[in-house]
Amino acid sequence: MATYPVVVTKEGRMFAVLFPDFNGMSAFGETFEKALDKGADALKATWRILKRDGEKFPRASDVKRLDPVKILQERNLDPTRETRIAAISVDVDS
Image 1 (cartoon, rainbow, N blue to C red):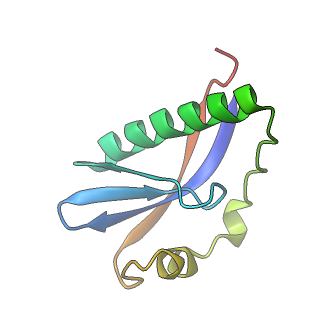
Image 2 (spheres, one colour; image 1 turned 180 degrees about the horizontal axis):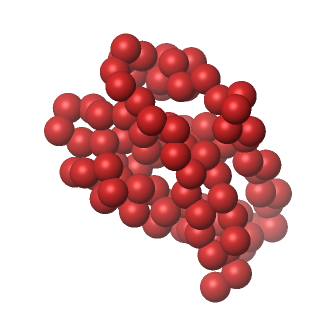
């Protein structure tokens, strides 16, 4: 099982899920829950690719040290929007 923190923010009509531990990786959904589901799909696919290519997996960030404002700014998103920190877990052995 792999668990990574994510920052979720509302962008227009969609919710964006941003993965601070994976350079530029994000997912989108029409609802908070759908965005997290899409994020889980993206995380699992990324893990499969890294495993296939023999690359190292990034370490999960410490949730207490995440700065959502900085993460939004790095991606040119509005840092004043409401954000939530969540975690996505996927079974990487299947």
